[in-house]
Length: 370
Image 1 (cartoon, one colour):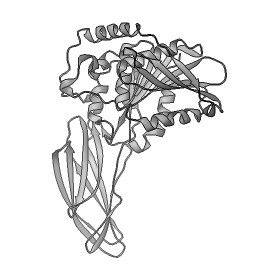
Image 2 (tube, rainbow, N blue to C red):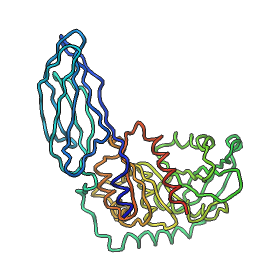
Image 3 (cartoon, rainbow, N blue to C red):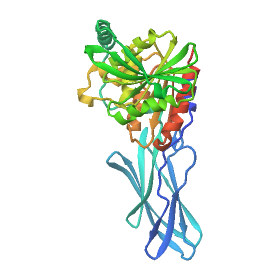
Image 4 (cartoon, one colour):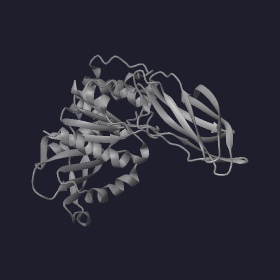
């Protein structure tokens, strides 16, 4: 299928972090981890780490380089190689090893000092979870159907206030409060192109802990130059709140129905993921490093992301943080591999995440606009 090809051909931008160099006693040596484009290995490609040791201009250099391959807190391999390099010249060292599907941390030391490291992956599309996944038996859908029915008994009571100081460009920005399940209020920013028309709409979910980020959202939305979409940015406490946001958009005459999308990062991505499994009105979803709010043993069926993944029937764009700053990449791929829908993934470093991910999301939503 085309989506299988997309998943396997997706561009991989990998987190490959390293220290520029280190001075040793009585000699100067700069170590550099070589950075070929692809550090995720597939099929018969043997994982290999190559390091260049460059001597200083005035000294011959020699020493020992130690390489460890780590899975979590466990050391899988420990290698060492001796090197010699004439002054101003370099010596190339290479470490190869076998791995099971997963992501691993490589650390390098010389003379007892840490000089660099990187993250590598092996056969990510074969990674499986160690957690026991409960049998759905249809109860996931039943639970959420009942929850959505209960939600309908709570009036939206949406209030909107135009923020004049932010509505000076090509977009009008509103502060919106929407009544949700249990009577709790969802605070949102609603950004609409000033030119009359019907537009696709993106529900941008923000983590509750990102209060400073949320306060800045209004100004960010006001400076957005995209003129072909509506953005509803909101902090939500539960996945059912996302359904209420969709209710709000469905009643807006400027929204092009059938073209409502959702996105989120971390725990917000987890809520977007569950919402996409239970609300057919979401056309496609972009998830960056989704993180469950529950410990494995305490995860209720209705909040289990693996069960939710199997219930999603729309295109999914999946972003994986290679260095694991937000979510463990192995756990994210175990989740990605449970998806049965059209899907594609991208792996890239966190330091470049914002710019690259924004571009990927825009193109993804454009591609899935009907």
